[in-house]
Length: 376
Length: 76
Image 1: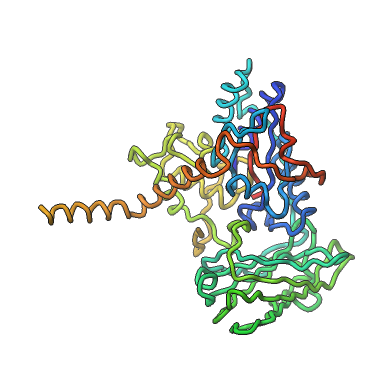
Image 2 (image 1 turned 60 degrees about the vertical axis):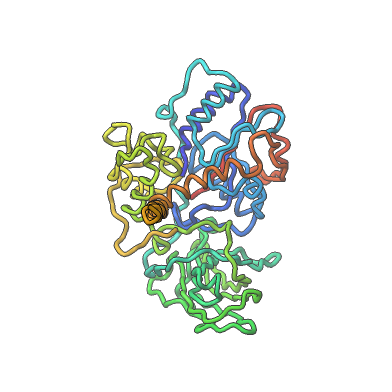
């Protein structure tokens, strides 16, 4: 989440002075949130994400799309929302870990000069479109509540002229599984909203099979998703496997079979393969939302208050950071220039239920569903 | 005196290892790390091949001749 309106305001003031602004589309920071988006598998899919981001964020700032090997993200320090100012000779003149439009304006006033009339953030009207809508209902299959897991490296085996990955695997493992080879393995097959597909429940449910390598011991090497009464739905099909032993150097081959339809007519029987590796994928982001875990309100507020340097129990603008910083004013509901515990809890509500970059809404006071835990 | 010193050291260790302090240290280190990690201010922007949303490939070294603001983001 970052302050798109704030940056758009600076962009409007400085584009006539020759300054160019770009958003860099990188791997998703929080898959499954804000429209049930999942990590793209192909460059073409990532380009489609960026085109959706143009519409969904409604900014006139153009996008640059990182390559699928995440080379620009890796070359610039691997942060989800970092910001860089480059001079005309191509040298980095400013860098910060989190985007901060007010600081960008200060930088440009210093480097390029002040503008006559400053566009205020609140005067920027973004032309925001909603996230992609799922083509069939959700809620038919209860979500599996994952334990604390991290994404692991998996390679989809795409075939030339093969069908797209309508459903995309999200593979996650507990720390114990990654480090010691014994623990829980999460396999989630999530429909990619960009392919507009829904499950065809009139035929056999999704099933998967693992080819277990030498030295590995799994309690379960295949699985079948539950039969669903509704003709179609778009809920993820999820499994949690107990792994007794998985040697680190032995990749795991997975085959999945499912029936997916695009629209009313075009249905496909799909068989796709993946290779899973027993190592963490640092580019896969941290899944958030139903099943993957929401931010816990109290824990979130406490974490943020760790930055309270003067110990007054509230955060001033200088003490606030990261996720909260760009929306300081909007969340400072009593307008005292400080964010206190309750206001910080409102931030987590918003993150949990309306997490959409650029779209600012603070009207939610709903709690996250009971029993869901925060993930790191 | 020696016992008092030991007590003081233990007390300091407890304070420094409290969750709040740990979190604060982590955040501080996190940010300071970022600023000292390569590329640092003064370095040339790494030259890599990227795309425009319509799929046209170009190089980051093409971003010359003007000030450029780059901000990382995504749909989530």
